[in-house]
Length: 158
Image 1: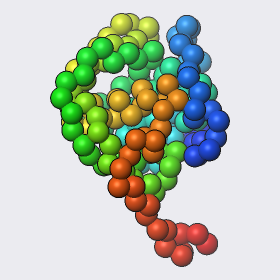
Image 2 (image 1 turned 90 degrees about the vertical axis):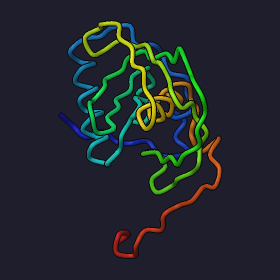
Image 3 (image 1 turned 30 degrees about the vertical axis):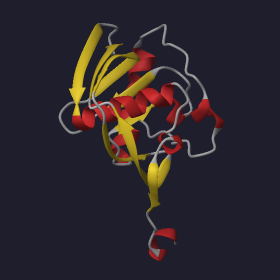
Image 4 (image 1 turned 180 degrees about the horizontal axis):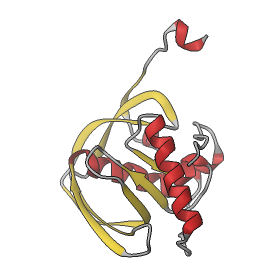
């Protein structure tokens, strides 16, 4: 596996509408593994392909229970609303309050091309919505309220 470069705020790939994946093969599975390694290295719970420079409809999510490799996701149901804090690997140290659906149902293909679905709530639902937004060129910072930024310690910058 390999660490990938995370694209930061201002990179045009983050605003692109991503293309559907039409071929699921060994190369794509390696890319998903590389995305996961990158996400774990940066202590994230989700990562979308455009965040590492590839504008395709693929995300990896792991909120601590199970890793999901999600290809061509579609949110087919949203229930309720809830506001909570979010951050993003492409905006390190920036957090904001975002309103999202409390529960979602997402249909997708797994890393072997099998049609699947997830019914999620809580952090998993929030993460799925955040990552699917990336695939449509939407960034959490555009809808976040009460945005805060962590200040790095001087030693972190040296």
